Image (cartoon, rainbow, N blue to C red; front, side):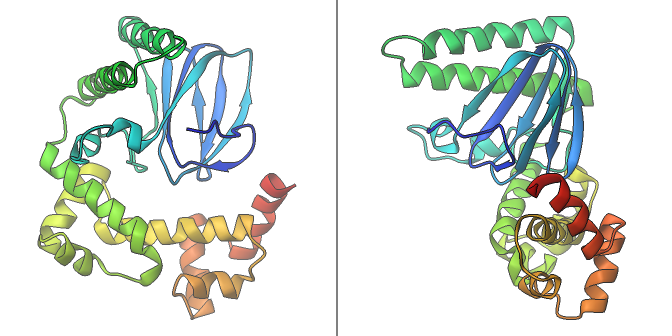
Length: 263
């Protein structure tokens, strides 16, 4: 992949795993800021807007990879969906590890770096080492959470989230998504609630509001144009809904975020 410019606000088309050996850092994903300390990992997925906010004397690094690389020579995308910490924007993307767990992860990372720096690195070895790393991380997450979300539930949730990403501008209802996924709305809600703590309808609305925030921050569209582009044609209702979701008016949010990110 072409190395992205990550020193400024950027939208991910790739996965990123950031690790911290020493120091502290602030990372913002879609307006939510997280603090990272030593022996921690941080996960960013395609579609998310990322800002490397600030850092104190920091030692660590990042691994960037694409979906195509992860699925190299295989067709079953469910193997990617089975990893709970990827493509799940509703969980905490920061993971603090014990010294033992972090040491195991770092040894795998060093093997990745060593292979990548060879004169003729093997894509198969790199892919295999990446999968070892991701499953090490998943094991640590499962240990911390006291158990793993059943694969079928996790895959259904990821499929739902992917559909929402494709259709959130079309005012598709939770019932419509359930029908497309060949499950009942009750079952979809139960699974989504299990994975995220939110209902399917709340996930749909949250994605719509996230796009509103991005448009208010990074475009010159009027507030009326922004709301209409997401299917909100009643300006009073839109303003009320936005304030309920964010605690701010659309105009107040635009002023604050434009000053922070566009200047």
